[in-house]
Length: 114
Image 1 (cartoon, rainbow, N blue to C red):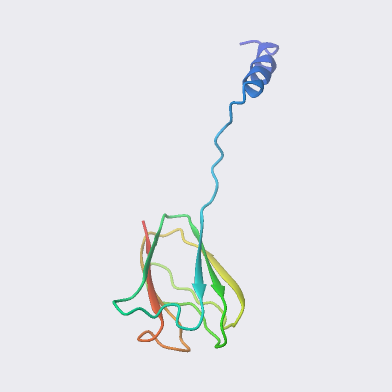
Image 2: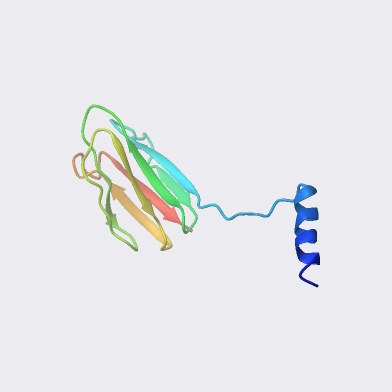
């Protein structure tokens, strides 16, 4: 292919409406607030793919935080009533997460990274 045909080929491809796929990073949002993790049957579980950024959004009257008690990587958010905390999860595994203010028995979740 000559230098002159490459630009012509690119222009023709773009004029046909052909799109080039772009890898977009996934984001999963999880609400954190008063009684959001409380369930009648078991602990809520969220499953995401490796490389996903999980964003916990804080709301409610009481302060909360996100703390990993066990998992491939441990992390902890600051305690807050509003705002958000994000973490890109690059290691597969099961993360057990709870709020240290309310305790694992009252406010916890499981995050599975596949």
